[in-house]
Image (cartoon, rainbow, N blue to C red):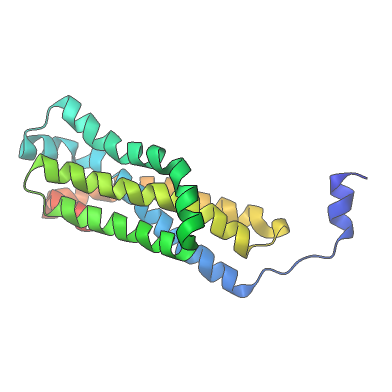
Amino acid sequence: MSAQADTMSKPPVKTPAYAWVVLFALYMATLAAPLNLFKLPPVMTILQKTFDLSMSDSGDLMSIFSIMGFVLAIPAGFILKRFGIKLTGLVSVASVTVGSALGAIAETSRMLFVGRFIEGVGMGLIMVAAPLAISIWFPAQKRALATGLWASSVGIGNIVTLLLAPTLAVAYGWQSVWWA
């Protein structure tokens, strides 16, 4: 019997209404990570002047965020198992928030680097926690739509940041991008 025939013979499974609320919360939490990841390139030249950063330092400032996501990819699974989805998600959002606030008040490039590092922790955690939460809340037959909607948060975060960050930085200073 084919997989298609097998799924056609089963009655449709209803998605719990609360699952969509969970998806919205996951979307917002995940959206915060790429918004923070991609906020740096539009204001890079301002930061180079403000903190006397070389091109190499500027690249490191961008990549330290992503390195944390990479480094946390496997341990995030263990963290999820130990502390659960809710606490891991809250720590993720707190990391992005604290890291961004620390960067916004940074007076040295070291503080800016530490802020970016902490933000990266948040992205590393949420990118593992969100798909697990979707798989728990959505029945297998409905999971593809929820996962596809959730995955759009990275692209949306990239587009929104690259469109709005330059305007914010010019109008209110680079720190406004970090606070936003």
